[in-house]
Amino acid sequence: MRTHEYKQIHGVLTDADEPLTASEILTLLEADDTIDSAHRVATVLGRQAQRGEGDVIAGRPYRYALER
Image (cartoon, rainbow, N blue to C red; front, side, top):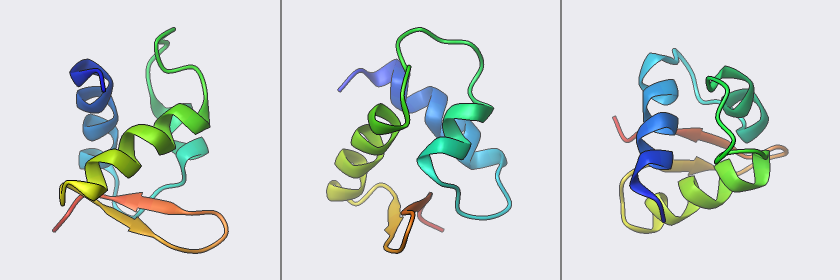
């Protein structure tokens, strides 16, 4: 995983008032050609959640939040 990708995504989630979908996160990210799909956002956040550094909220669609 690229650390800068997680830092960018983390910044979006830090500012969010509620859990967000990968598509919503992608929309809120500044123009960045390294994160070019909702799938990439989901992959980065899924790996972080496995490490205990975030929450994946099951549903359709999945939503993501920082551990609170």
